[in-house]
Length: 114
Image: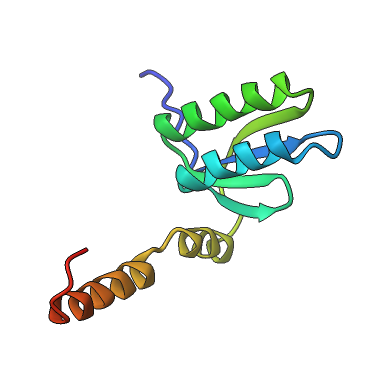
């Protein structure tokens, strides 16, 4: 019987960009934010594990290396149910969605087109 290794639940990108030039830092931050990455602390980003997330983090790792920095992409599992719940909560967008649908209904009721 072949050995089956389960996929990890999470990907972490650990970054370090030298110098005071904010341009690469902002470009990377914007790309990761647009991809749904959550900032755990300065230079540490989290995404649920997927091939798309891996590709996004690898692209940013190359960008960081090109800017003279260092970056590591690390797949991992949570070490406790509490930590897993905290990570899952970071990606819960239901409150944002409820707010956007509520404001859409208000705007729709006003007769304004957006």
